[in-house]
Length: 248
Image (cartoon, rainbow, N blue to C red):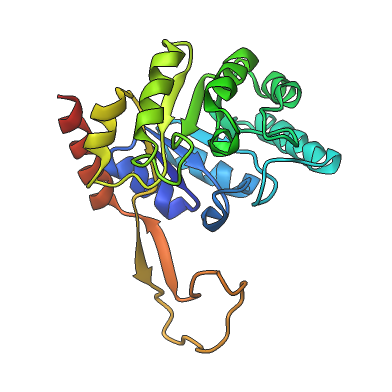
């Protein structure tokens, strides 16, 4: 069970709840962006489970400019130069026609090794997932995070099953996208995966005694300032137990 987290609180809750790995992100509201080096160092120092770091310079599409590619390479160098380097990286980039940019991906992998490498849900934005999977395998990735080309893993379950069969153990297919305790057993059983990815978050109120109303700091689609989301230990345990029941 890999949990995507964007705070120290969520990372600690992930381990306490039984997750076996975390994907450390910034801005989960945008699907995850590169976290700060400071956040990584604190999380890495306090967790005993593996910490993977997403390298994504912004939200939006996965077609990056030369400047953005430079940022991504610099971020990888900064993280790999840290005293406690990440156990893995999560990354992905596409060409203008939506196919996997294998040239850049190979460059990223060369910079990041020996850390493990996951190709993220950029694969779900490609025109042909079967072709994209072969490209990802050819680059040397260890794992692919995918919803089967749909908004959620449950919707993409038939494709996920096909991808697991196609992969033939050459790469780990890790379903992710809308996975909860209500559907995880069905997903695990339906595609025969050995890993899955979720956030298992819930909201809690801010502890501030003064909460100014009517003022938003972020954009119109940003969450309320006084409602915080974090990984929920109980949710994590429930999802994990349900997933195991689907395997047994």
